[in-house]
Amino acid sequence: MAKRETIVHWFRKGLRIHDNPALTVAVDRVRENPTKYSLRPIFVLDPAIRKWLRVGSNRWRFLQQTLVDLDENLRSINSRLYVVRGNPVEVFPKLFTEWNVSLLTYEHDIEPYAVKRDATVEQQANKHHVQIHVEKSHTIFDPEVIVKKNAGKPPLTYQRYATLASACKIPPALPAPQKLPAKCTAPASDNEERKNSACYDPPTTKELGVDENTLSSCKFPGGETEALRRMEEVLGRKAWVCNFEKPNTSPNSLEPSTTVLSPYLKFGCLSVRLFYTRISDIIKGQKHSQPPVSLIGQIMWREFYYCVAAVTPNFDKMVGNSVCMQIDWDTNKEHLEAWTHGRTGYPFIDAIMRQLRQEGWIHHLARHAVACFLTRGDLWISWEEGQRVFEELLLDADWALNAGNWMWLSASAFFHQFFRVYSPVAFGKKTDPEGKFIRKYVPELARFPAGIIYEPWKANLETQKKLGCIIGKDYPKRIVMHEEISKANIQRMSAAYKRNKAQKETDLDGDSSPPVASTTGKKRPAASSSATKSGATPKKRKLENTIEKFLKKK
Image 1 (cartoon, rainbow, N blue to C red):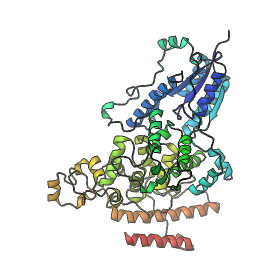
Image 2 (spheres, rainbow, N blue to C red):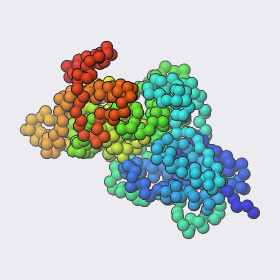
Image 3 (cartoon, rainbow, N blue to C red):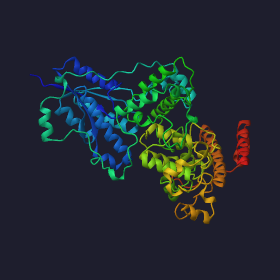
Image 4 (tube, helix red, strand yellow):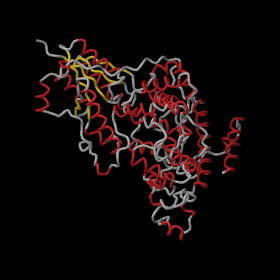
């Protein structure tokens, strides 16, 4: 009698059973001939990954909860999740043989590490005569199709991307698979296999190296079940969905003013295609807000960044990144450390960074404020440093979106109005004039009145003593003077733009000299102004006049 063949679905992202095309292919193959095939959905957990992957405790907890939930949802269709420990490129050759695998399905991934890993696994599968089936379902639109429509180049503006995507059809979201016959589950020998070798149960937080005593209460539980529940809760507020405009939400409300579905989309607990189509159904025939600020618009930003990232080498770096400005950022460990841990002396900025560390999530406009402060606004530190901190602390840290947003907010790519700088004082006051957000996350300042809590340094020493917080002792002094440094940094950005423009013109003339910006992060002297003032175009003069007027207002 021929040995039963195993169909393996490999979960990486896409940690759900609804609208999961690659899983559906695996399930359908097994259902066609349950006596010939058995199904094993797996997640490969590499114990060595902690040595190089920047993941904080909140995200490890989210993943652990997600895997437990995924296992439960698979059991509801007469399957289960097999969590296999080890490096994927070492694990698969063994599994192909031991399980008699004939088909491996998984979801496509654009991240450089994943691309390299998947190419190796595909080679191994070919050697073992295992068929591979890959589906693109982490985004609504296939980046490859969009790039092809754009003459082989990534669209570098949101508007261009939206135009190209609007011509693409969106297939309906797939339902979760129906229950499999009991005979489709893994063979009986699995019980003996588990007894004598590795346990395939989802990991505990302890196995993931998480000290639960260091964790705050869990505001955003991981998993498909919570993702769908949260989506239904959001979509139940139909008027809110129709009227949603991102700039009108609050970056510092005590409870989130947006959907907080981004972590679930990042891990694929929620299908972005399902979310998109459900929103579309609600707003159809209704008066509603428009992209890019609407909910549909927010999803399209995600699609845009994925498309550019998929075909841009070194997308998460400045050097070697074709879409990124080369800027002479400073290196300042003390300032970076202060920003990272919420000790800049600016209560609004510090409250945001402390919320991030505690809860793993901050509002996207809050991200704008702290990113601008770190880079072109105040500290003049590379966006790559901020990207690394977000990569560690955010629940929704997504390679493509994280890099794309940091380039945007540092005015290194996509956005070029570098003279528009967020105030670390005024911006927060607009939506939280009483400073409730600051009181929650910067408790040292809890007794400071609304009129001064955003600028505690303005209180005299006697007042500070009465309020129980001395600036410079109980709460840090400002590490920079925003009103002064922001003006200087605008000038530095202007000089960087001129250098980059000059460099591009030189490159077009055939000079292959390296960019002006330093690869070490140390300061480099600005280019001579005489080289850039001559031959200034009307557009260039208009920009310089705009900057000059802006600085005078400040």
